[in-house]
Image (cartoon, rainbow, N blue to C red):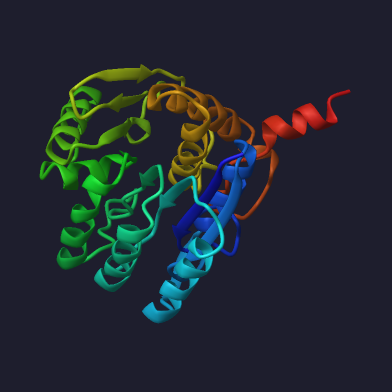
Length: 270
């Protein structure tokens, strides 16, 4: 059972951030741990405010885990400013795990930039440290220094460029394009491409999808021989979790996915 550490912000309604990460890790066969970078007052309708604890406390959290537990994989999520990025980077220099997945939280799905220019530059320096990055399409465009992709071919070209430039695996995600399909693709630093087609699930309850996906990938990679197989397994789990999201009835906005739908079906079958 891989021991997986999420380093990210919170979501008190449980759908995103470390709360979603811990559910994703457990659902995919890992033991989840979490270090909080920011306390976020949010719900299914939006973010209200963010509180960032002192950097000394962030470092204490990180050291408390690594002083005691052997970490098999890390998922990096919300790193909201240069101080947080520097603190995490400094710790990673001494405690780099076998697997590191970076969800580069830079741009909201709405297109709103979440980091200032200095923090974006600092986050770019983290990319070569990661094994896999999982940007949404607005974030992929920022990393490629290009306009938002208007087609899947454009998104693939941007992902291929970023993978080569930063020598990191890139998961391109087509969910933002709309339409009947929601394809994903894995691009390697050497330009190889693995495709993961899927039909779009008709639901508005997709809150925390990016967090959940990246945490699942960090959990599955230590259990499987390759990133291509990890993405295939995670994609199936995520699609199923989205397909059953409406059964949760959580919140009045964009509700969470059902992380444990598959397990609950097995547990309560018959």
